[in-house]
Structure formats: C-alpha cells, structure tokens
Amino acid sequence: MKTSAALFLDLDHTLIRPKSGETFPKDADDWEFMPKMLNALWYDIHHTFRPIVIVTNQGGVTAGFHTIEEIEAKLAKVKAALVTHLRGNFDYKYPTEVYHYCAYNYDFMRKPMPGMAYQAAIDLNLDLSKSTMIGDMDSDEQFAKAVGMGFRHVDRYLGNVSYTAPLNVREG
Ligand SMILES: [Mg+2]
Image (cartoon, rainbow, N blue to C red):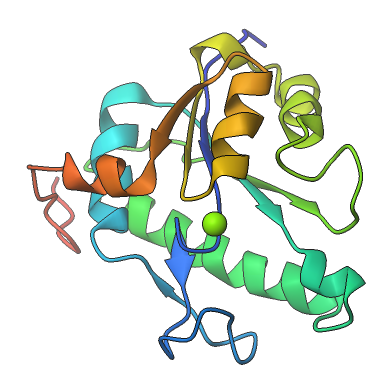
C-alpha cells in the first residue's frame, strides 16, 4: 500500500454539532452535520481523493456522562451518513474511506498529544507531513503541529468554500 495523505477531522463543533443548540449533546441522537461541511468535504475529497480520519477526544466517558458503546454507536451513524453522502454525490465509483479514533482517557492518545495521529499513520500508512487537520480548538492545532501536519480552523475551512456541490444528484 502506498503512503498517502489524509484529511483529519475533529468531531464535535467541526464535523457535527448538537442539533439542540447546546454545547454538549443531550443524547446520542442529538447531532447534525455542521452547516456547509458536507459540501466542503465533497469538494475536498473530489479533488484530493484522500481518506477522512476522524479524531475525537471523548473525555465524557471518563467523567461518566457517556459509555464507550454509546459514543461508538453514534460515530457509526455519523460515519454511515457521511459515507452515504460522499458516495451518493460522486458520479463514478470512488472508494470513500472514513476512519475514526477516539481518546477516552487522559493519556498520550488525547489531543493535543499526538497519539491518535501516530496510530492512524501506522494503521493506514499515512504521510502526516502531507496531511491536514481541521478543528475548532487550540488542542486540535497543537495536535497537528506536534506531528508536522497542516492545520486549518473549521471556520476558515468552511468559509473558503465557494463552490456548492450538487447535493443528492447522482450523474451517469
Ligand atoms: Mg471540537
């Protein structure tokens, strides 16, 4: 397998946000994609063909707010919706790849520590120096910089999108 670049994405307030408008989700179904994010990702992936790697701190598990099973089930739903969207909007067969890593404990895997980036690099044979991280927190930026990965704040990533992908239109 050849080494490749990836698009690393923070989860909360980058890829998704609570549908309820609260800072923290009320339950496992309290989420929606960030406005414009699906179009931005479609446009990005359409041009770069890079896999998406979701990297998220879920300290709420350690604090007892959620179980690992609840978080993993939610992530499975988010990923399924994302893959369906990306595949549904390609007019040719593109093997959309979306992976995820969760930091449940306060250790080397938790952003801004770089554990999840190194784990993904090993698992997926990634070149981190050619990869990009999108996030909303300082810890996301520090995580990226710790491994020589580019960083873009989510506001800038979404603000730069000037092209609107043809949502729900499958050609050919
Ligand atoms: Mg975040």
